Length: 243
Image (cartoon, rainbow, N blue to C red):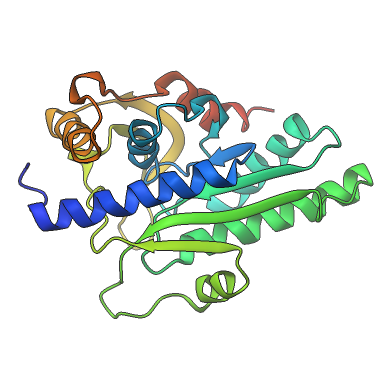
């Protein structure tokens, strides 16, 4: 194991990701959302667990507090996604998202509902029953042990399903995530913010080791693991933001 996690943490996380993969296989969504940055490694792990997982079904929305003007960015991305992909037939979307406080996942859900209402006004088409958006994700308790009330409500309404994994070992760990975004400077709190553009990809040896460990854990061939969808991540993240 690499230094970032111990055997017990890894195995609990791996069990959770295997369960998420099984749920996803059962649900059969038309699209899988993997918010940049945190959900990118989760998709690689799911694709190891399920060798038939359709990587072409994955889209990478910019739903992260790391982005400058997050609300306007995600609103534009969701609106363009609906215009490009809704053709009158029902669509089922499952968003694979890290759940710690749950606030980011709730934000993504609310912004998507706003995009649906906007689409209805602009296109005179009611999507609220035709486009299903659910949340599925590995969960880690925040330091104060209290999650956002919004995510609890979504769980109770069966819109969100969370799988407790102890520690989300990939979370906020640059060695275990290969996305590098373009820097957008500092916000008023002095925190680094980013632009919704890929600067480069950096697949570390630690990341490949994580994938190999996971493959070995579930009985897959650790020699066949890799970072996936690199070109699609860039196209999906940036393409829906083009005018």
